[in-house]
Image (cartoon, rainbow, N blue to C red; front, side, top):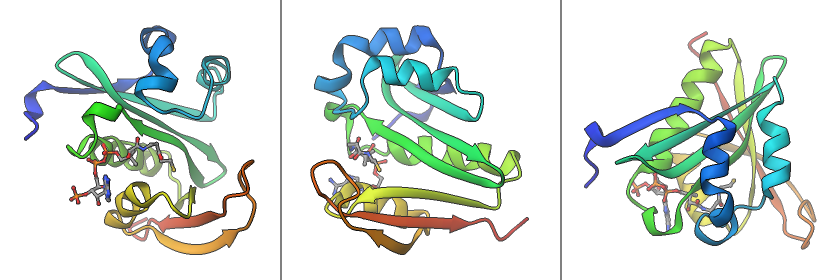
Length: 152
Ligand SMILES: CC(C)(COP(=O)(O)OP(=O)(O)OC[C@H]1O[C@@H](n2cnc3c(N)ncnc32)[C@H](O)[C@@H]1OP(=O)(O)O)[C@@H](O)C(=O)NCCC(=O)NCCS
């Protein structure tokens, strides 16, 4: 059970990325390299957040906003910290940012076999709107999902 008083969510700085640089691939299973990620942090259309639990970075994720659409670029929880609700908290914060930036919809692509991620997005009422075959380098199919913000 998470103690919510021990959670801190804040904008990702280069120093945060450097803190997890050595364990990005091993502990987080991230598909981006440090260098690609670094480039993303200086991209003004992107917003990245980190979630710290008891001071430790346990989850991070980001969106890229183009016109009125926020695309989820990445959301990853540290392997040992999965299934405790951290990604749900982070995604909720990303949705808040997208709404504050007057986006009308949120979109994402997810591998069709990535059930943990698909279940996470379904909890927020993201709906499948299409599939792209061979979208990923290894030939995997991507499911496209969107969440329209109807309260705008
Ligand atoms: C997808 C991912 C970010 C979820 O992170 P998490 O912190 O474990 O997720 P949460 O604990 O917040 O879980 C939220 C919901 O996600 C779903 N979920 C999480 N792990 C799951 C699993 N192993 N199997 C099925 N559903 C799962 C559930 O619906 C869960 O809600 P519930 O606990 O009420 O059932 C994590 O598995 C991860 O980092 N995966 C590798 C990176 C990745 O694939 N990212 C998505 C890119 S599109």
